[in-house]
Length: 157
Image (cartoon, rainbow, N blue to C red; front, side):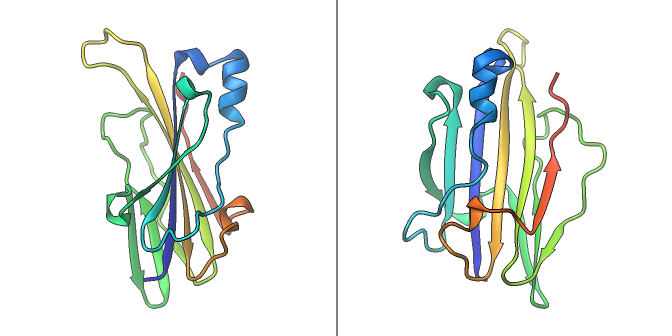
């Protein structure tokens, strides 16, 4: 299976819900150039408010990325998992999986809100962006417009 996966996680707290901090958060990229030699691994990027949303590159085995990928009849079926199950906002109805043909790619975004079990800590938030290409792709593919864009972000209040 010739698949390229980029998983971006942007995380923040209530401090970045408004003002200049929210402007910086909202300006965080949703796609990055692929590093040389990513190979079969997923390219991961992590950004957090404590670092001013500075991107940090990493790698992960594709099987450790929260997305289902299935190849069948010359198409790639893509459907991110919604995990953890206790993350809000509620998602009563999820969009269907996207089916890619070689040369296409999808950007799928999901957001979450968390609190401590005892409610003793402030809310924290994260946005997962999955950029997934099927077939050979250029290093700068995720800097452009996707073939499909699924925005599964809900209200975070």
